[in-house]
Amino acid sequence: MKKLNQFVKTLWKDESGQGMAEYVLLIVVVLSVAFLFKDKIKGMVGAKLGEVESSMGSFNVDK
Image (cartoon, rainbow, N blue to C red; front, side):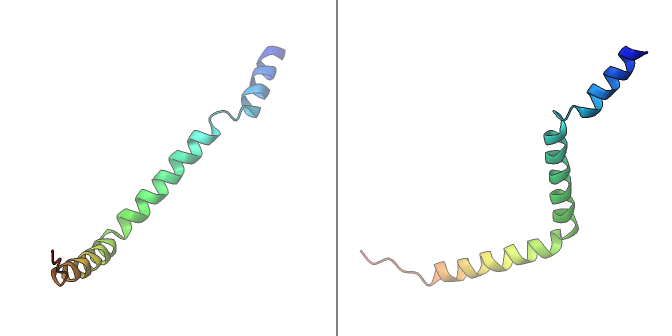
């Protein structure tokens, strides 16, 4: 029983997998936010690309 208690205490104090779990949770949160606001993000990116496209149309290079 003493070995089991020692094993449980060691396992409880072990934090080696904590960093990976935090990264996974961060990725899940970022993907969830991106999924929730995907239409708004697409609209904003489309508007900016439209601005760039119209600016490039008026840009002339004379050689």
